[in-house]
Image (tube, rainbow, N blue to C red):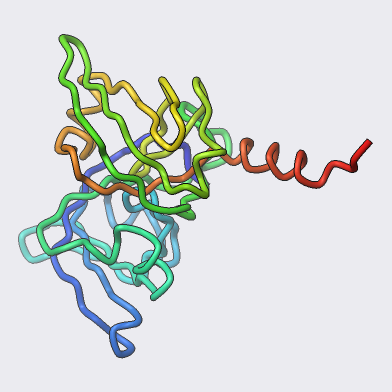
Length: 206
């Protein structure tokens, strides 16, 4: 479980196909101390919960960890499109007693959203995105959404499109500063919206 507050930006340094291309092992440079987490720890990589299967430091002291991405993850998220040199948002899993500054993010990745437009305003950037049709019903004005692992508040909604406003700090400390029209990002809708929709669907007719 995560909060959508990015704590590091990692860089993909290698991608090794395994199991006839159905599994990719990704090695990611980071600033996390390898001694501060165990093999098997969950780390959100641009919003996708992944398991650290290796970790260490290079000869020059650069910290890194490796994760495996299975076929389903490669198909349903942007992970299958990552390339060596790409930068990704990282977040360590939530610990008991930690401040919940964003919203509850599971890191499951519901699908891929596309940036329709970017507007640079005096004190922020406005992004308009298009959500997959099956997820649009879970996105509400002033509700929460996680995009590439970043907890954001929905500004406006119109059909399948919605907008978010990003402050300069978030643009500086995440990969969102590089978003442009056409960029594809991982989206996870609010867990509470999913449960609310399910309750409505299963409510007995009066």
